[in-house]
Image (cartoon, rainbow, N blue to C red; front, side, top):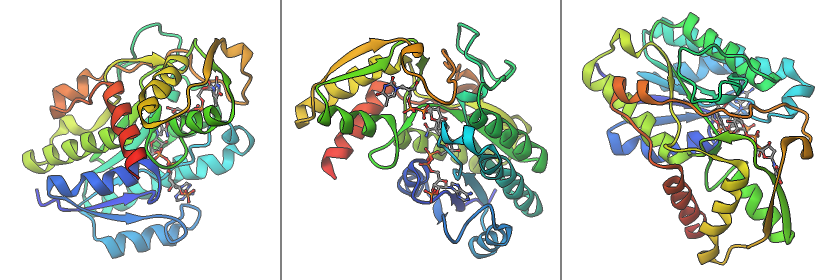
Length: 297
Ligand SMILES: NC(=O)C1=CN([C@@H]2O[C@H](COP(=O)(O)OP(=O)(O)OC[C@H]3O[C@@H](n4cnc5c(N)ncnc54)[C@H](OP(=O)(O)O)[C@@H]3O)[C@@H](O)[C@H]2O)C=CC1
Ligand SMILES: Cc1cn([C@H]2C[C@H](O)[C@@H](COP(=O)(O)OP(=O)(O)O[C@H]3O[C@@H](C)C(=O)[C@@H](O)[C@H]3O)O2)c(=O)[nH]c1=O
């Protein structure tokens, strides 16, 4: 399959930035589009991006990712997270090209008590998860060659993420309180970008296969809690002169937020490995990679 030109939406976001760096190493040419010239609320900008990029595959990274704010404006989150993928899928179908749609562990309610497989039923607890689930369906329904990758707890040297938040508040305050009863797999955007490049390379090298259509879990290896993640962030940043606040373990009920988060969003990644031969590194290796990049910047 000829697959070189990859349209990446959400330019300036964590994952799109990771893909910009990761794709050329696998022989792809990333073509990035972002706001304001690519805006889901203006469908003509989406059509124009497809016309200009002439892509051979698409990775849709653009999304409303403000979890609490989505509770206040679910309609706007739905436009970005569900109607956006529907539009992108329609353009991909017209061209007959693969679409990789990125989704989230927040489609689950976190009550399983074990890592979720792709066959487990989603049951989002909040507006962000609901709109992202609708986006999965729209991407799959609108294009035969759609691969949905669910990831979680993404962090990068730039953008808005838990690592940068912790380092910022940890430098300002000697003591922090962080929830210790929510579990997940912190996933470094550069590692996820490498994995996506691997998925695309497999598609290119084998040609499209029916097994590539559907949902796949793509998170870093291993899991932790937000509290233990915070401790690991400060430990990893300390050799670079990062702050060392005291991090108190608290319960979810001690940290009220607008959106309810899943208590245990661990994801089983065996289908990704079996189908694409792709596995992500341990989350702590991803953390070290991002901390190093933060301090090299
Ligand atoms: N961050 C995380 O922890 C996780 C993210 N994901 C998913 O991974 C994907 C990538 O996330 P990440 O890179 O972290 O996200 P970011 O928030 O870093 O980037 C999202 C991008 O989408 C753009 N965007 C937002 N609304 C629109 C819109 N209406 N039209 C066009 N573009 C828009 C943003 O533009 P602007 O900056 O101008 O607003 C930004 O460039 C998303 O699908 C997200 O749901 C999944 C699990 C975890
Ligand atoms: C800043 C802070 C957060 N917390 C808690 C709140 C929450 O339960 C948890 C994580 O907080 P955040 O709001 O940073 O993370 P959140 O925005 O919920 O992260 C999610 O983003 C979306 C986009 C996803 O798809 C998810 O996979 C996940 O990464 O940590 C504390 O306990 N103490 C603190 O000081």
